[in-house]
Image (cartoon, rainbow, N blue to C red; front, side):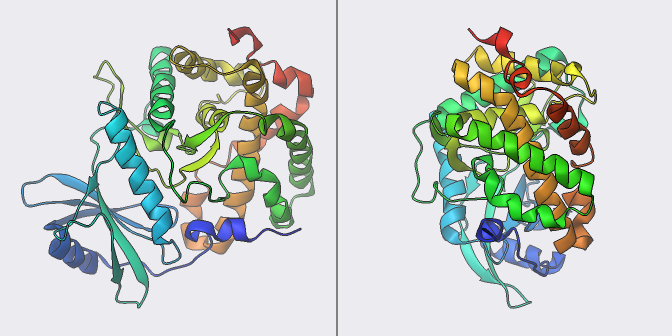
Length: 350
């Protein structure tokens, strides 16, 4: 059964014409008093700019994909506001109200497209994907994830039950994308991965649920190596959704897999997981399915990025920026017996 709806959600499948620099600056100046357009930032599905006000303070301004609906963006804004209240010392972007005191407003651009515009505070620091973190710094990453989950534990929103392609609880809905994989060997790998996911899915459905960040990746963490905290902020709440808490952890671990194709692949993951477990806990069952969920994210990334690169060839380099190592990672997972993967973190269970 095909499920193209899950890829259409949130504008993931929608092409659009970008807002020109001069036009974006005029809109932001009129609505926020931001007068200096510094740069356009690479993003997956919208127009995002780094801008400044007359005093030099920097902000992020986003012109949504034409297919994004206001209710889903409201979910992201509400989540940011909630985290800011629950844990004020955990830096996430603050929502900036415009001159009419609105956190978001509708704008029809010069191409005739409807765009929802919002502005967020800019978090100073270096994207974590540009830094080689130490073991101690990776532990601090895990601690930040635990804090973020605690801050979001009691958050709810009418749109938090949305279904999006990057939420791997819905991985099986992506099977129809196998047709886009031209290599028979790679398609066979993905099919074997789907079979493994089917084995853990009933167990996953018994695990704890809450609203999660769902993209706790190195590119969405801002670091300050000179600070004792190391992580100076968490950004990009675009994939926030109600799912399983352990899925948030698996996404964080995926981005810590080493370049090895043996058991050393998890060495850096252990550091992050240790930091996470010092602040919160996972059940024995969650620890057993955790490495399988890392594999599930590898599968999702291979399928979604291959499909989107074909849909948007002009943005293919950005879309595929993290996919090259995924095939080796998937080969490693599938070379190991199922029970061996389940026990990867067994020695870390309290």
